[in-house]
Length: 254
Ligand SMILES: [Zn+2]
Image (cartoon, rainbow, N blue to C red; front, top):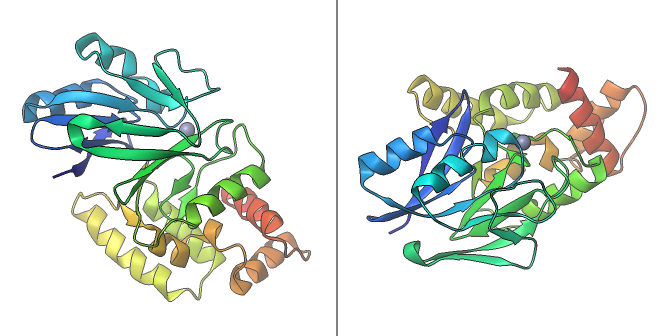
């Protein structure tokens, strides 16, 4: 049976590691050593590496992993990742035979120019695009691209488990409460996630249903969110892309 476990890297990155009794595949190994340690400890063979985008804290460990394991490296077409062996984009699928699992690739540009997500087995690996109660910064794309990417993810089933690249949840919830102080789902999420962090546990994965109920970046059409954004801007906007862009800017400044 497929299990997905977080291997911690740097300060707040997760290298999501899919595994069964004998094999593993890793998503976004920014660092090699924690992954090598995990594989050795668990006596697992690496079967594949998946990358969502080119930032060093997501791909920096790939070269060192390849020194030990000759495995396919999947990642986005049109991003500078020299260690890739299989460049993929929307419409492609990734099969990891050793784990008996397959993923569809989704193009979700915005954080970077060609950021991708992997969706399969009820799980979504979305890198730095959708975060628990937040979203990634716009380094290479426009607000409109990011909004469309998030809408694409939003259309997946509510029970989809969301595996994002960083443990940012509590800070994101703090910001979200400022946008939507009356959202009771946000308050219960905060108390649960505070307890998880206090116990040293990850707040991830979340579910898409939960993100739709609490993540302001997925709630750009909610009247309370629009109202709050208008107060922040001191002017009236209502189209969701403008609301999204304003929340993103507000968060950057918070
Ligand atoms: Zn990134």
